[in-house]
Image (cartoon, rainbow over the protein chains, first blue to last red):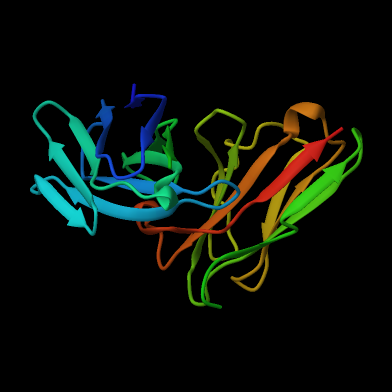
Length: 112
Length: 114
């Protein structure tokens, strides 16, 4: 069964601190993995996409890693800002137009 | 337009009423997708359109749900005889071609059924 599991479910950190969000997947065959940021009341916005051959990709203060062997990805946020407060969703396609498996997301709260 | 737009942004309705949700995809995007996001849950795929055609409607939760797309652009999701369990955020996304991993999301419509 194609699944995407994210952890932690929620996380609270102080502004300026770093954090790492985890995503484990069982989707096969694997082609890519995408991290989305979803602000409260808004639709998801793509942060980064990782293909099979990529191990690390950065987008500003966001760095995603991928280990295709262990089927794990992480999203590291450096020097967190209040605007980073959001849900972060891991998504893995498995084929077909409806072949997207979404994680339930990690709800991140940055406190001043 | 610059992005996917949805209307209304919020809808409160009484149980048993019909509602219609609208999605305007990015201009030129041939594929359009509808999702539902219940509180504390992940996104649930409902239906997709390639052009005006929806090949697979099996993702719709019940026969009270229907969707259409005209002119390869605007799509409407209609929920008849709404129930409280229909309360959720309904998200629309579009992509240039049928590539769900390249889709752009709209802001969503928050539906509350009283």
